View 1 (tube, rainbow, N blue to C red):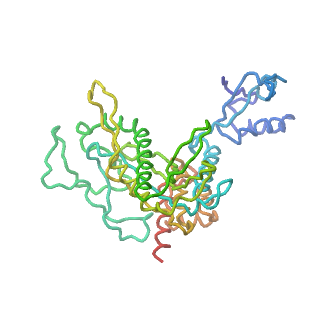
View 2 (cartoon, rainbow, N blue to C red):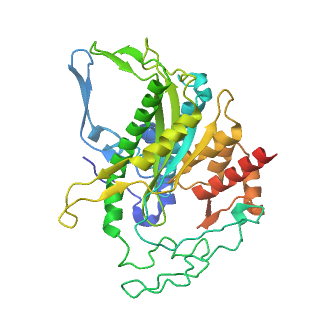
View 3 (cartoon, rainbow, N blue to C red):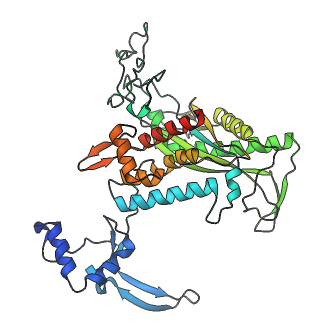
Length: 415
């Protein structure tokens, strides 16, 4: 259960600074500070009340009890764990650090993960939703600018059609506007009545099941490829003692879901090829040489084309909705065996995972890119790195970090 924090004099009306000074002047301040340390500086800690019991692990015997009334503020503090910096900056910072470490270890090894995973074939795939109707969009067919962050290139017309006419509801079926990047119409349907809102909502709901079946199809495709090429299956013994023959290759993945402007979910997925050790099925070993990065990419494309999900019948759709991926399935190579990952590519894809759906400050971006804070501020001042002013703070949106890193990677590869 939870309860509101009870504040003693001075009250809320005198302001936060007076409360802070009053708290710091109290004799029990040091004890209170230690008591709140587990919350980790959380701005919105969860306040728990009740009885705390110390239980002996082996026997289950209760060795002691403590009620929260005996604690400072008569409550137990726990960090909220929210990853949005606009809600809690400290918990968002912890989340970004955890996400960075998880993805980094999966790509390059360390912290118990063998460094050899850095030589495993890895791809970065983006799965998008299908079209549910035409929406306003911005497309620049050819960039002539030097910095994408300051791009002033003229976009193409949104939906330029000379003979489009009107839709059944009387709305124009064409849009000749050249939308700016911050145009509020971006992502909005050309006709609200023509747009299949129901299908989009159902697609978002069942997209997780679609991904689960897609992952299974990728592994089945690779297993069939192993049979075709004569790669022997591996004999493993399960925890229950049963013997199973499994393909000599498996796919590990990390996935992030993101909302597009049109409010449809799409997925960014890192997929890594691993081998199978018959003596230790949980070990991370290199995949057999007979299965390559191209095979993994082909398996992803094949699964995205073939796999669909049909939803249960609904009064509005007795035959159910068909859930399938859109045509835009992008698969990019991250590293190529036997070479190691380059620093630029690691930063580019780690940044996507560490900053998606979180707002970044210049200090956060400095840590992420390995720069000094002065260098980040200089890049903001020169326009190389875009930012926005939020009150007295400056925020850097995730896509702007991605654009900057992508531009740097392209320059390194072109050099």
